[in-house]
Length: 312
Image (cartoon, rainbow, N blue to C red; front, side):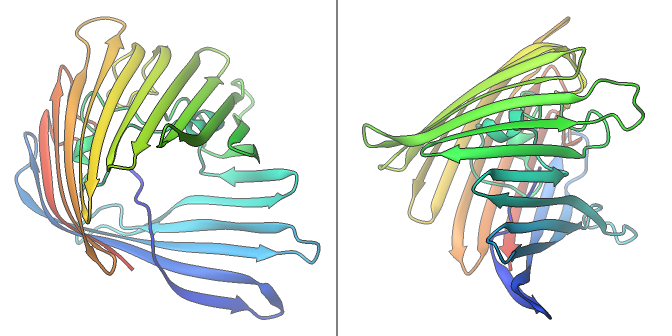
């Protein structure tokens, strides 16, 4: 799962381009992880983000990001790799993004997971789904156009088969965010097609002023297996997440289940607790339990992690 990097540590102006800048941020983890298929062991990981932004003379905004990820974690023989490269231009016409970015299906739909853990145990059990749809069917180079008006947003995207052998993956999505009855509400709807399969999904979330929140998700997967992550061809998925935040503490729980084309339905639940220590440091505990399928993180039917997440 992708880590969200919160803190910028450097701003560098380009010579001769006063409106352009580079922002550098980092995220690191340290702690202990374990599971049915791995020995309990120490864990550390680091990610560095390079964010670019600028403005043309007529007000057109442009920018992007490149991520340098220690993909092998604490493996001393591993080497970092660049990932999540994507760039955009935006203006009154909307925003166009090209690169390793979400298709309109994923863009429009909200996941049911709250908080974070070292190896995302709470959100990588056998019942987990992230609304990835048919993204990365080919080379993971997605072009997405989005436009917002008031509380609404719409998007369309495409991913091409560079060999010309397959149909393009196209997607449409829309979402709404607003307040209702004292709660912040979010709704999303998306559809995606690759010429063979059509998937669609919807999501809903509500965050109340007393710290409680809940989220629901459903996806019709049209018998696909490449959209799931556990390799089980499935017709559909549904999930529910709840969370509570008080002061610096956030706790959450979620459950998800697939409707398999054949055989038992993969399912699982996740638990997470985060405590904000301030200054960019967060204490994290995560647990995932799976049934009828091995969790997507490769740690087995049950996995756990505890430690610190550090944003710079």
